[in-house]
Image (cartoon, rainbow, N blue to C red; front, top):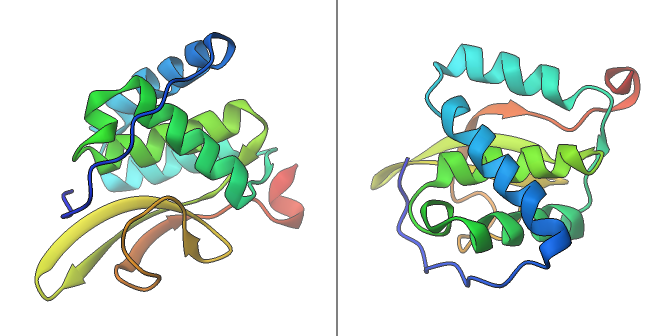
Length: 143
C-alpha cells in the first residue's frame, strides 16, 4: 500500500522504549504478509483486553516505530500501521487500525486513527475511505 507522503521525521527513541518498538516492528512484518481476513482476525484477537488509545499514545507509538525502522519511516504503511497498533497494545491500549483506498487517483493505504481522526498522517481526515477497521475495544470487547 503506497501513498505519496512527506517523509516521516525520524526521532531517537530512549533505550528503555527501543526494545518494545523493535519487537512491534518485527512482529508486524509477517502479519503484513497475511491475507486480509486472517490479518483482521489476528489483530482483533490481539486487541482484546486493551483500553482505547488516546491520540497522544498512538502518536508516540507511531513515532517510536518510525524511529527504529527505515521501512516504517518510508513507504511501508501496512507494516507501520500494524507495528503502531502492536506497540500500543504492548502498552495496554489499542487505536482503530484501518486500511482503505482513495479513487482519484487510486491509492491504497493503512493507518491508525483515534476518534475517527488519522494519527500522524500527512493527509486530511476523509482523504482515504476505510475498507477494513479493527476498532479499539469498547465496553464488552475489553474483556
